[in-house]
Amino acid sequence: MCGARPVSVFRAIDPQELGAPAGFRHGLLAPAEGSILFVAGQTATGPDGALVEGGFATQFAAVLDRVLAVVAAAGGGPECIGRMSVFVTDMDAYLAARRELGGVWRERLGSHYPAMTLVEVPRLVDEGALVEIEATAVIA
Image 1 (cartoon, rainbow, N blue to C red):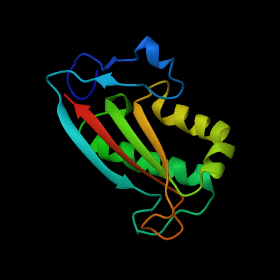
Image 2 (spheres, rainbow, N blue to C red; image 1 turned 90 degrees about the horizontal axis):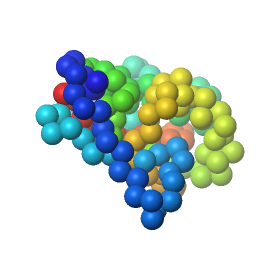
Image 3 (tube, rainbow, N blue to C red; image 1 turned 30 degrees about the vertical axis):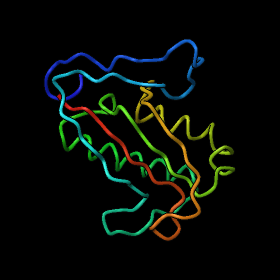
């Protein structure tokens, strides 16, 4: 189920010749009856626009919460997210926090893994932001 009415869940497309994905999917096929939701890049800001206090994992959690809030406002849940792009300012910090990030992920998305991209960038528009996430969801 993805949204207010029962629909086929995304069908994972993971060709054997690409190897088994870990923590992502090579592709997800959306149900034909879904509406596409494009979630703008989110950083770890609160309602007042100020960046949340804390390190990489704290910001990652806040960013995921913002992405999920947009999806929920459209009537969907974490399982509706089919694609996610993660932009980080420090790949080493991301890699060092992977164990903690795994816990953050499981608390919010369980075992659902969309097709994902991870990119290191020199900076983000919000000063002090360490991570930004944009997503695409299908709501039916």
